[in-house]
Length: 122
Image 1 (cartoon, rainbow, N blue to C red):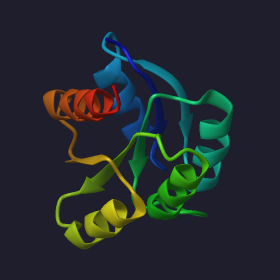
Image 2: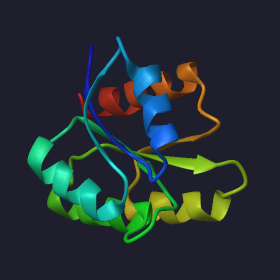
Image 3: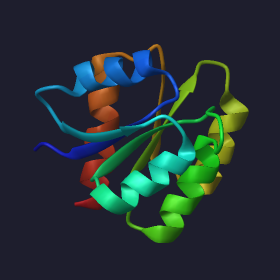
C-alpha cells in the first residue's frame, strides 16, 4: 500500500535520490530543506510518513521531529543519518523518531523502514 511521504533533507541531491527510491512505491507529496519548512509542510500536507535528515540548517531534524510529534503524536518520522552518528540517533529516538535509515540510502532499507512504521500505525 502506498503511503504519502514528506522528504526532508538540506541536500537537493539526497531529496532527489529518496524521491527516485520511493517512486512507484509511495507518493512523495512534498519536500523541505530544513526543519522549519518540514513542520510547516507537515501541517499543510499531513503525510503518512516523514523522512527527516538529522543535520540541517535553521532547525535540525531532532528539533523538527519534536515539534511534529507535539503537533501530531500519531505521526511517523524516519530519521536519515550518516553512518557513525549513533549519538544523534539516540537523541532522535528520544525526540520520538519511529525508525531510521542510514546514508548512503539503499532502496530495500528505505522501503522496509517506511513499511515498518506504516504497519506499526495501521
